[in-house]
Image (cartoon, rainbow, N blue to C red; front, side):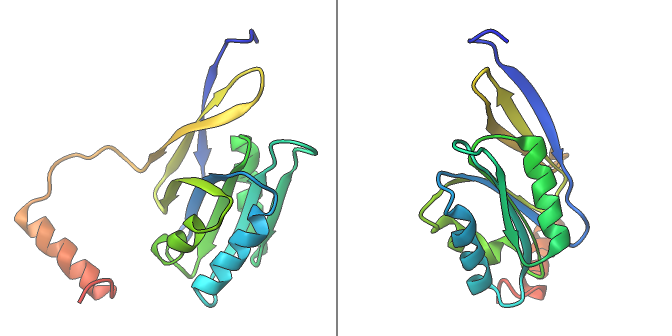
Length: 165
């Protein structure tokens, strides 16, 4: 590959039924332990697995979690993305809305690319130096604009699941 060449990859990230995935970027090996603490203190009983792509030194995929299957999913997704300082979190028994502010407040976290249960693709650029996330494709393209009935359904749904009164 030439020095100025860029290859673009689209990485499919599996999201099993009943699970959400959060993908972001941080800047330090301490990220794993701090995200672990943010998750367990945000939602009692949350199950999760975290993987973090170390960008220097040993350049390992570091991992933590309290659920072996979610930890394996996070490691596999991190292997496929393979971009420096990217982290992948799989959670169940909680929603991203329950943990995102805590994750964003972790000192090492730079950005969040996605927090979803939708089909997910990560768009990755690769140069001679390494790989980086350009963005994500979260779910599908809209097919229309909500109607008055759709608005009413949305409002009822949010109240039914307890997010609005």
